[in-house]
Length: 220
Image (cartoon, rainbow, N blue to C red; front, top):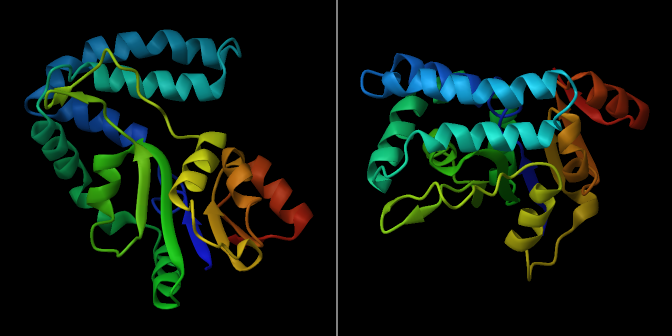
């Protein structure tokens, strides 16, 4: 079985979803009051990261946790509706060159996975019109039907993507040499190296250098 593995931020979706999430909260008719406290909490890890005192992976995970913290105690259906409403316009902003690849892989019978650090409800909503076999994202911890901010998120990034891919494909006989993976960032390198056909999508400079050196396909 061949697989086709897609990243989301910067790949299937051409922007960074965290910026979208911030702007959506800031302008939300109900939750905008939470924005200032969230923003103040975010500044400390972000500035430490810019001063190279805080690792990028840790900063991204912390940012996602801080975002979720402002919704402490919210019912599961409420947070799902929040992300559904946020995601409505995103389907019209996808990278259609990548969408065409995704649809071709589905037609060809490949096993398609979407693997991203974005929150799972967002990923599910944006991709609900595609018959993706498995969507793997950062799950929102729940307890008794409400958001549980006492349980830290398990942010899916870097080698955690590989871990989740291995788990999703356990028991399958994978033809890795003829499989595909799509990513835009150097943080996707461990996933891209899994397959015989890695594709760099509008790559940032570090991934661009690797892709050119190894003669990987690049989608601009």
